[in-house]
Length: 276
Image (cartoon, rainbow, N blue to C red; front, top):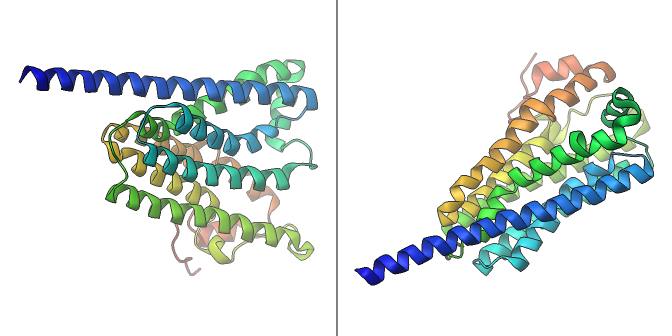
């Protein structure tokens, strides 16, 4: 009995310390990434670079955790691959789309409002905020890395399947939209075919869904259940803050027939279009 109690006490102390290390390493890694990106943005006078670093930052952080935290190696590598593939794909896609096209309208508006203070205020309002969000969203990765108990089992398989569906929605949605925009005949028109006929934002839906898949993998350990805060925050921001609302306010002013598209198409969760 004393031996069992002693062993359990040691285990919980070890797991707690390991979890704390994982969270601290993630915070330090993300801080370094965001401060470095901010410095570069000041030099090139373009804050849009943060969009590219968003996905890349997750990928880097997940691999840093896998290589430095003492946890279950199978789960660590699995999480690093899942986050790494998503983050790298997103970073490459946004780099191809954004580089050479100037600063995004969102950051231009923030720069105009802040004036000469923007190079300094953006450290908090742009890079600091996204750094905090990156840390919160990556909680399932942090918890999944920090728990050394074996955890690649049936629940992880479900998580991988959810992640695959989400990644497919995001990647295919981005590809379909990119091809649509390349056709000059589609200038000013609404993309309403393919996945875009099922949801007005297949890429955002896929983004949220794949993070729920990552959360499920991280939750295999039990302690990783707390990590569901990450995908919950990601989904909330995509649905209510910086994703759907912000983009739709802009599209409603710039796209012919967008009101009709909104009337027949789901804003987020995929479903067949309504007949009007």
